[in-house]
Amino acid sequence: MSVEAAYRLYAGKYEEESINQENLIRRGKMYQQIGCRIKAAFFIMVIAALLIAGSVTAFGGESGKADSLEDVIKEPIGEMMGSTYEMSAIENGTLPADVQMEFYNAEVDAVQALRDGKVGSYINCRIYAQPFIDEFDDLIIFPESLAVMEYAFGFQKGSLLRDEFNDAMKEMKESGEEQALYDKWLNGDSGETHCIEQDWTGEKGTLEYWLNVGTPPMAYISEGGKIEGLAIDYVLTACRIMGYNVNITECSFSGLIPALQSDRADIAGRSMAVTEERKKSIDFSDTFVSADVVLLVRKDSVSDAVLAKAGAGNADGEAKEGFLESIKEDFRKTFIEENRWGLFASGIGVTLLITLCSGIIGTLFGLLWYLLYSRNIKWVNVIIMTVNRWISGIPAVVILMIMYYIVFSLSSLDAIGIAVITFAILFGIGVFGLLEAGVEAIGKGQVESAVDLGFTQTQTFWKILLPQAALYALPLYRAKVVEHLKSTAIVGYIAIMDLTKVCDMVRSRTFEAFFPLIATAVLYYLLGRLLDAILSGIEKMLKSENRESRIMRGVKQDD
Image (cartoon, rainbow, N blue to C red; front, side, top):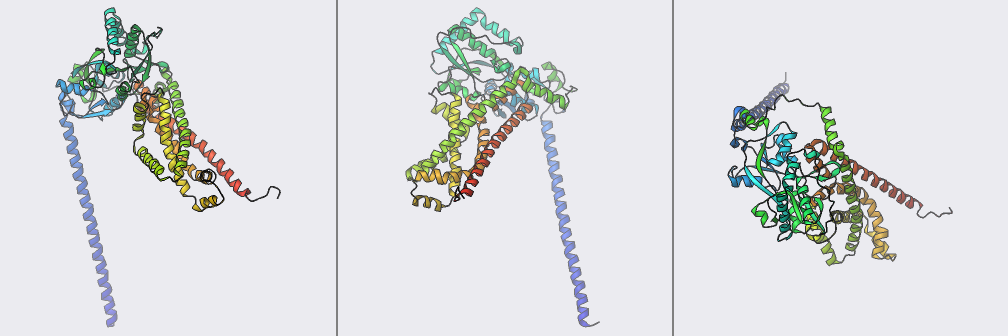
């Protein structure tokens, strides 16, 4: 063997050993990393187990179940937005000042959160809590009362109507009509009970009564979409004595006081809690009804001792419906019972009315808004861009409420008209942006050529720029229209019964969230697809006409 061959042999062996060592080192590092990850995962699992065990044992009672109020309030308490139940309980000393609260827009949402275990309890007055106990076998009212609240009707600050209403209330008490109403609604089956008909002349005019609709017996939606309840019946009876007719408007709770302040409502509330803070903004009638403030809890979260004290049986062993049976029952309650399909049909009509009217007006507004901008007047363009930025930077629901409660507060224009104007402005700003992008995609040479040919600035826009920009913008315009349809879902904030608001009202009657929400989502999807299909057909037609016109351009008819 030569020296050169021996060198190559040893060099090859050395290189092979080096590679083997590198592989061993690489594998060692890999195993080390895997081991570290296993240790970290094990550590996290141990910590999570300790936290879960700690949270369970901290809840107290037998097997982690609550057997006292102190145990219950360790978990978050659900409450409807705008309510003051926890404040009354804190003032009464039954709840600590640092109690953890979770707020929801509707009672049915808070109750669903309780049933899903997202909160440990739900605070409400006994009158409103009882319907949920009657509906759901897995809930009970915790036996300990937290406070007693007084409820009344709201009036405009300094209104003489409040005194007149109080006189009618006194007359109702003396004649026994008030007690008859309590017996009628609180002691009977509210589902079979109806308000009195307005068969009096109303020689003094018509009063606007605004209220938030929820669960029986105070105010709810009955068969055919009619608003029924003790509060409505009480106001109707009082107004009959006073000599007024009543026009009833449903509104979210947060909109009641603004409605009084903006002079849209004369009377407000189905049962508004009287607080010192609210007295600064509105006046209250005499007490209409008093009720205990209580907590709703799940049966499986409290001890047997609490269940016995509440007079409730154990929730274990209750038969559950099969999946198909449950779907059928949800469908019946959502659409068939009390002809609720009619409510959905009405809601679809209102949603389409607002969408189409505001879309057409908004498109015209956007065209004119951009035409003004295209004139390149410096101070005008500064104003236009400032307005666009402001409107684009503010949530649509805030703009809608500003328009309703401030800008048009003294106008006789109804809520749907205000919604159409508001969404037309919002949609018009969007159309402005689409046109701006479409025009920028067109070469400046076409504008210069149009000017050389003697076209005015307006003629150039309508005959040269707009037809081409529209073709660029149409696909985005279709998406904008569908988005516009979905954005109208907020009109319920200003007392409009659109599709989303109907869904909320049906949920308040069925106490179910799943099927009404899924049904509403499907309806919105189908409406969106319908509008998109219509606009897609228009787009294809316009593109076809534009292509044919370009083919025929320069060709004589007699060739």
